[in-house]
Length: 238
Image 1 (cartoon, one colour):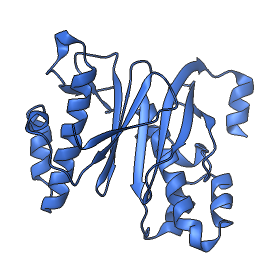
Image 2: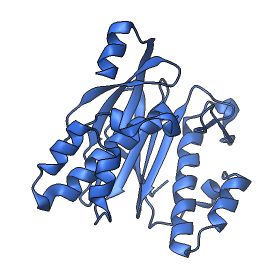
Image 3: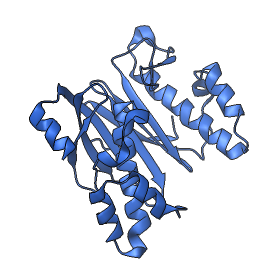
């Protein structure tokens, strides 16, 4: 797994890697991919996109295989959770997430809790103002709008990765109203509280990641889930 390099993790049960998608995937990693993953790769129009997808998923499978107990080695078959998030069919105790942007990918694996990770290569974002209006909370939008114009794309992508990491850790992104998730445009550590469709309070610990220049990233780890009391619900509705 020469293309993979370990990154510092804020939590002992979570491991984190960066993957260089310019480097060829190892054959043993490609052999672990499912038929559906190979089929999806073939649907990419451009060859560089196809190769990056294959390299990212081959690295994910190899990292998961290395984390599996002996009786499940070479068995990294996925199925889908209730809301469509991939999970290991035969090793439910391992939680994982993958994100890739450009030639970079991030992989997070946890032995204890659901995780979400997101990476974005720094770049010009078309229709940035419209997107910020659609997905940012009022507080996030005010922070972003007050950012000096030269740093506004960085602030946007930082907030975007933080929000994506939280949503991916929840695993039910289509049911989440993004403006209700306040993650900020900075790099502060925080616990984010989200009301789920089941009427529960999901607590997630969120960290921005220190990545090599040219990209921003974030990692979220799901904490305890508790029923929402009337006082807490009033805070959400305020």
